Image 1 (cartoon, helix red, strand yellow):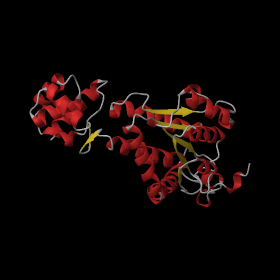
Image 2 (tube, one colour; image 1 turned 45 degrees about the vertical axis):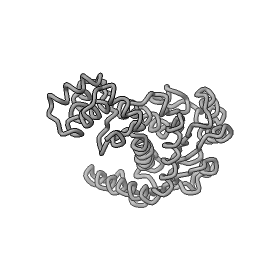
Image 3 (cartoon, one colour; image 1 turned 180 degrees about the vertical axis):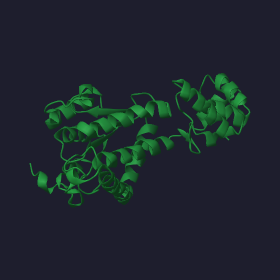
Image 4 (cartoon, helix red, strand yellow; image 1 turned 135 degrees about the vertical axis):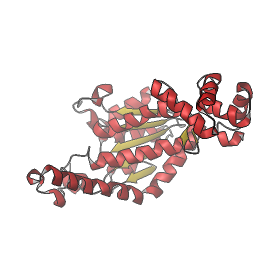
Length: 295
């Protein structure tokens, strides 16, 4: 294992004296390092674009988006997948996150799980992976066997494959149709890839899921119109979204929220097209679930 060649394992010459810095100095230095992440991601936007196009196409044909990784990388994939459910009103099956070692690995390290290519394949077999799906392997080092095993299997069944790594010339890139490689420089704390590497991965995952959901009609202007009102805060947010989208008052928004059976998108179409619930539902079907197509 040749770790010294990996950017994520190199010592950062800007932070050699961390243990001598004041809290203020350490904060400033860490913030300076973090600022490099967004600029590094900007450089790979051309590599991210076709991945999103593939995800949108998969969604439109009944496919799923599946993230897989180990440790921090796996946890970030699980987090992004979980957030899609309330934010965009999709089923938990549509975007899924796999982490080496299973749910237990979300909170504790599972010994040896990330070193098994077979486990990566096994987890995808259990999801009944098909050629309609997209699999994104996430690994800061770019060499995690669990991820490589998953990507190899995904390719064998004809699924679209992508990867996110924080080193150039990453090993996992060889197994992905759409590799994304970001070099944000060595970590603030040597080898601690939950820091800049984790931030890099989170930024890219935000892009993949959010812009793909925009591409299938889950957003109207910049409003999350398929939000699931699963708690009091989200119920109030739903009403505010209806108000913003239609320029109506709070009472009207609340009334239509009820009329639409708490379906924000449906309430908006009812108001904007002056339609009954049934007619608005038909308009959305005809408009492929894009509000602007119903107007």
